[in-house]
Image (tube, rainbow, N blue to C red; front, side, top):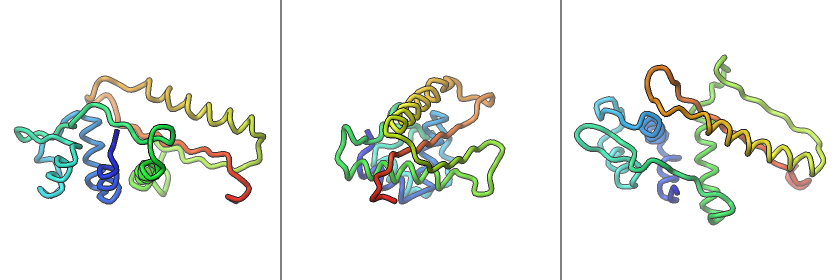
Amino acid sequence: MYSDSQLDYLVENPDALQLHKRVLLYESLPVKSCHLSQKQLKQLENLDLIEVTSGVIKPSRTLYRLPHYDNSSPRSVAKASNYILKHIDLYASREGSPHQELSYAVQMVSPAVAERILEQMRAFKRWVQSLASKDVGPQVKPFIMVGFAKQLENKEL
């Protein structure tokens, strides 16, 4: 699981976050393709987010999980939320794109419908994850999906 210090560093350093994502997606990158300073690379290494050996940057592990409300402190979950929101900030095209869907709906629904929507969001995320390619060649493209749905309390409006 990502630590608080790892999440803080990645959210505060968008270039480091983008490099970390590229390394995770492509499994390795040549150091010479990296546009970070040596200090930033060293910090990613010190935080156990990457390994640098023989001129190649690799992820320090194959799986990173985000803190979640049912397994972490509220403070850690807040940091994970900031991390997810940073992805939207970094990757969403403000002008739109034929390869992007940015949707929005606010409406009244019953509590049962709200729960069903949340269940469907979780199922959709699992389905998207099930489609991950094992290849990292030119025939596959990086893809990001961020979902948000919440049953609001009246006091939140």
